[in-house]
Length: 144
Ligand SMILES: CC(C)(COP(=O)(O)OP(=O)(O)OC[C@H]1O[C@@H](n2cnc3c(N)ncnc32)[C@H](O)[C@@H]1OP(=O)(O)O)[C@@H](O)C(=O)NCCC(=O)NCCS
Image (spheres, rainbow, N blue to C red):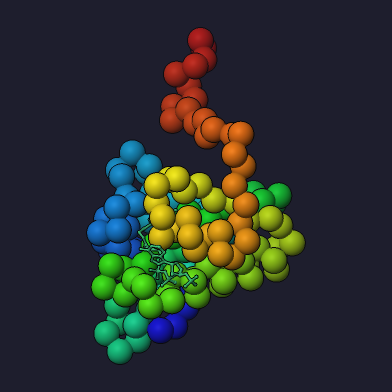
């Protein structure tokens, strides 16, 4: 398995991987264009590829706002789970954040035990007292 940077021609396979692993919803708006925009701002979408099959087996999308690295869309294809590939992708993601000189943040559902186990085993700590807030349409709160 090799880990490399996303290329625009990967989008179909990457989107299929996100769908099969349950991390894709249309309202998240994760298009090929958004990936390029995040990467142009200093982020990186890592893909793991099985070179023999030409198949993308895992992703870790790292966005950077100049202060923190955020890890999104962290997934391993179901056929390849439980073989250590998630851990390899997480270590590569940690190396990216280290090289940026920034902490690495992520969100995970508390019942997603495989992911929680992996993150905690690597030293991620939970912010117990915090909830996540988001407004999907910021304009809806404005009176202009
Ligand atoms: C979370 C996910 C990426 C883990 O990938 P993976 O390749 O299966 O993980 P690994 O084989 O590298 O295992 C990493 C660690 O998690 C543990 N783990 C893996 N599957 C597990 C399970 N079902 N239950 C508990 N722990 C599990 C492993 O034991 C290993 O721990 P160890 O190093 O202490 O032995 C994968 O399950 C996945 O893609 N899930 C669907 C998408 C998702 O939920 N992503 C996270 C969004 S925040």
